[in-house]
Image 1 (tube, rainbow, N blue to C red):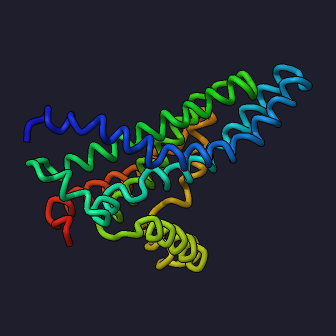
Image 2 (tube, rainbow, N blue to C red):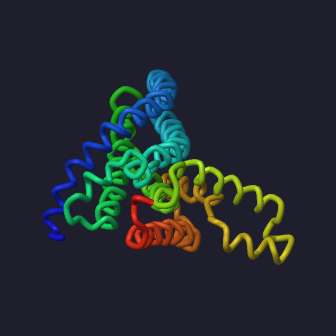
Amino acid sequence: MRRGRMWSYLAWQARDFVFERGAPLLIVATLMTFPIIVGLRQIRDTAPPLQGATSARYAIVQLFAEFSLIAVLIGINGVVSSDRVKGYYRFLFSKPVSIPRYYAQAYAVNGVGLVVTAAGVLGAIYAIGYPVFLSRVLLMVGLFYVSLGGMGFLYSTLARFDWVLMGATWGLAQLLRALYPAEQSRGGQVLDVILPPFHQLRDAGLQLARGETADSTTLLWLLGWGVSSFLLGLLILRRRPLAT
């Protein structure tokens, strides 16, 4: 497969992101951002500049801590499984195209699309809410996508309802850590190592968004889980026919 042929799919993948994921993202962003913008406009009109800027930064960071999770679920859901369920793979791969490379590119396109969407939300807040453009929250969006989106990509290569598996994994990990705290037993320590570290995802993202120094071990742990899951998904795509 020539590299040029793979790049020819890029525009189609970007279009699919806009039409298939753009509308849900726009709805979620509007519903979540509108109350924040209303509040920020009031702060802009009444609070002193320094206090207003501090309050605006806090509100924006908290907004994106919630938005990032929902945006990733929308951005990664069905990235592989949707083509299998709808039968699109028969058309997409009627020509000699590498399936793993195609979906690796789709994963990258969706990630870039999420970051661009987040930047658009920041621009809307800046324009009609409060004149603060907190670009560091884009790092939080990226962290969420790589770490959590990698697991979503893996599940999408395996099953139709990948978002259900993502939610079940998240919930099960939280439950097991609550039942077997790492500081109280050897089994809890083992579970804390082998379970996905997504209980630390929000805090690590907030640190990045606030410009604080995040714990490097936590970041590597989160990113390692995401990248490993993504690579395992590519291996499955190489070995397992999409028609199964």
